[in-house]
Length: 374
Image 1 (cartoon, rainbow, N blue to C red):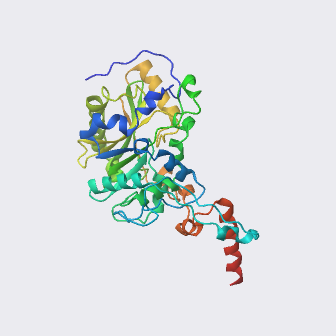
Image 2: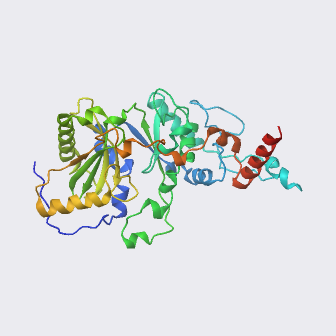
Image 3: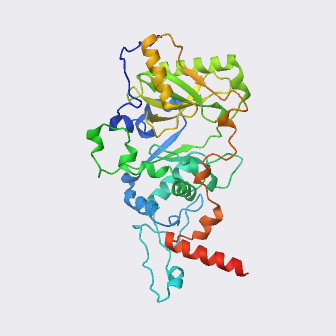
């Protein structure tokens, strides 16, 4: 079915979005519509559980303690894991500055209803899930969990989920209103004190093959471009017949399944998982069309330029497929792991023992001094 070409002559680099359009990219907003063509997912509304404030208190605390009773796939009954609000023990005082950190008792965070809800979903999905919060997955924190044959972000307990969320530099984006609704029109941006609704999304863990993940860019209700998500050289992308098959599959999938059904407006980004024979696809996620979303092998100026030319000339064959076409491609030749700047050794996490930044600094300096004298 041909797509009508709009006759607007000028476009902004990024479209002005509404709050509703950004919220449309939440899993809770689109999952029911596309349930049969996406991965099984469950949305946990933290406010409905009555523990959204306790979750924020734990998440924003300057320590790395996990909530009580979150370890293990099954709930453990301990005197301190009973239901109740999150609290922090008061610090004992000491005349000695050097001993103040060691005399401070550990904070206690209790999220029993969230613990229970996570365990229920893990059980529902055969023992493992993939987490995200609102719009964002903690992919930058994948290094923090022991790597298994199943792949990264493989969670089998509430503590796994919490550790990923706490260790991610991406997740705070979903908690700050101004960042969460980046790109909104000015009137809606003036809302500064409104709280962001917290939704924990747990997807059934699937062993996804990175070479079959594709990111797709829609501007002005036109599928402009598609890009491989994993920026590694893959042999099958070098085959023109396969590339054409992928383009046709994605174009038809978008036209038949997404274009008239997605409620996020005419400008958005979505990720697909292509089948092994390249003839079908599943939805991974949606995102608003804005600067905070990685454009991968495109840049947003390039997408704007394609849109402008399409509008003026109308004979460019879309979508344009970007892929790593050489083993010497700059994107495939990086000598550092992805999200390297977000990583820290697990020993540092363990050593912190829930200390705040100043206490951790003092303890770390003491440990270094001790190591030099040993």
